[in-house]
Every structure is written in C-alpha cells, then in structure tokens.
Figure (tube, rainbow, N blue to C red):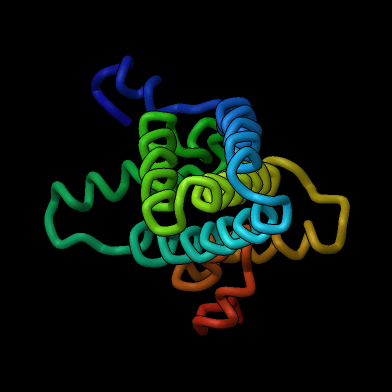
Length: 188
C-alpha cells in the first residue's frame, strides 16, 4: 500500500488490539463515573453512549467512508481509510482502526461527552460509546473471518457481505442494521 514498509506496517492492526486497548479504559471510565453518579444514572448514560456510537458507526460509514472525493489526493486518502478494505475485504489486519486514529478519537469523545453532560455522566457515556466501538470491531472481524453459528450472526454476515459484493450504497450499519431501515439504506 505504501512505498515505505514501516508506514505500511503502522497501518496494519491485529483485530484484538481494540479489545486489549479499550476494555481496561472502559473499566476505568466506569469506576470514575461511579464515583460521581448513582448506578441508575451511570447505566442510563452508558446506554446513551452506546446509542450515540450506533449512530456514529452508521453515519461515519455512510457519509465519510463512502464519500467520493473530487481530487486525486482526496481519492488516495479515502482509499487508505476505507477503500482498501473494500478492495481487500479478507485482509485481517485492515479491519480495525489503527490506534493512531482510534485513541485520539476516543479522547475527543471523552472531552465532548464531559463538556456536554458533566464529568460523571459524560464519563459513563464515553464508556458506552467505547463498548459499542469494540463490539463493532469484534463483530466486523467475525463477519469477515468466521462462519457465524447463530441465525442472527448469519443474517448480519450475509447483509454485510452484500454491502461489499453487491451494493456498497446500502447496508452501512454493520453492528446496528436498524439505522439502515430508519434512513432508507437497507439492502434490498
């Protein structure tokens, strides 16, 4: 992908990295939130953060990852961010965001959440957002590299592979397919 082997290696990520990186962060965020809010407030903001993640997943995939830039530089940058995944959907090292992108993004979510909701609720919402992100990454890897054993898993995999191989203008919700129905982009 790059002339520099070092840069190419830097963009490849083992799919377990988000889990190893963010699971301890989620635990710390929940402990911090619990020192500021009650359990019901923590749970409600945890669910709110997860809900915000699902909308973020859908809209980033639809509006950013499937945007067609007008310049050569923009097309190359877009290809490096998401196009490579569509060109090489079975490359296990190009299915999750590199920490150089996911860590600053997580920090941004943390700061915005605390600014909007306060320290305790915002911290709990960030934990929910990160849980959603990790679930998405693990599910996305599973869809590409395993045959799911449940009917739901098979349905999600079939749906996602249709996005890759039939119509990439539909099926943007990988772990949250309901948003495709809400926004009219469900696979036919």
